[in-house]
Length: 198
Image 1 (cartoon, helix red, strand yellow):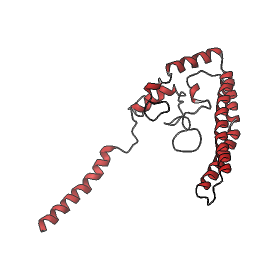
Image 2 (cartoon, rainbow, N blue to C red):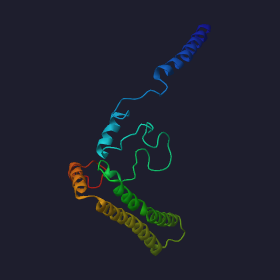
Image 3 (cartoon, rainbow, N blue to C red):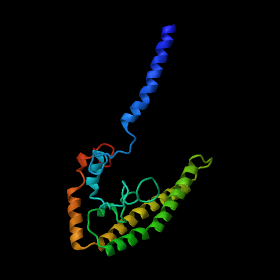
């Protein structure tokens, strides 16, 4: 019995000594990672290829782009005030300003539609436990929620068309060429769970 206790104490002592050494061997996380082209994982490099080239980093930029380290609100690292599908398209400063105005001009309307959708959803949820079900009210609320979704979709389409109107013919051609390279899969090739999958 005495031997068992001594062996257990030795094991605990060895473990207590080994843990700090293992932590030192792991590193403290300050070293640069060179797994991918931007210091991230190879998988993130593949994701970046699909989105197109990001903005060029400047000398004073942080390791995560112009906005530096840390989580926060807003579009995130590398966002340069243009929609993601325009990455890699060389835009003039005037074009960037026009696109910024177009994209940010729709924000109040989209917020209004989100509020309308949320209000309809809450009212529909309240009907689940209602003592008396009102079919007409449920239909009206469902239609209001669907209308808010439709308004958001139409707003996105209209905004995209306005943005495309800012581009030159050469820029639109470049964008069209990129779209054909990344054309959607045929219906039979879709992954299970996606709309249209067989």
